[in-house]
Image 1: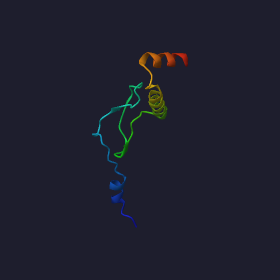
Image 2: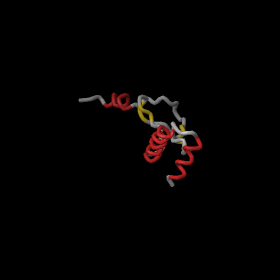
Image 3: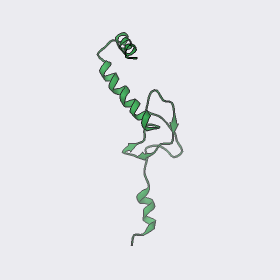
Image 4: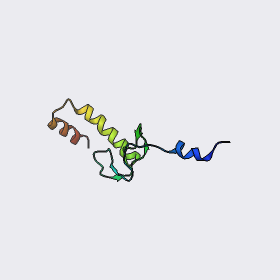
Length: 81
């Protein structure tokens, strides 16, 4: 039989953030704060799945538009509305 006292150490997750701290969502368009979670190797960076998806889209669009000047990029985005 497994000793139940060992489970607390098995289920303890270490995070790279101090206890009681809050972090801001990794989406540059979101300012939500939340308690950090997840394991140290893959900490939670976004407040929600939609924010995570939006940040991913922003990174991809930025990569596509990086060859354009700022004015060209803005004009291109405005034409897409």
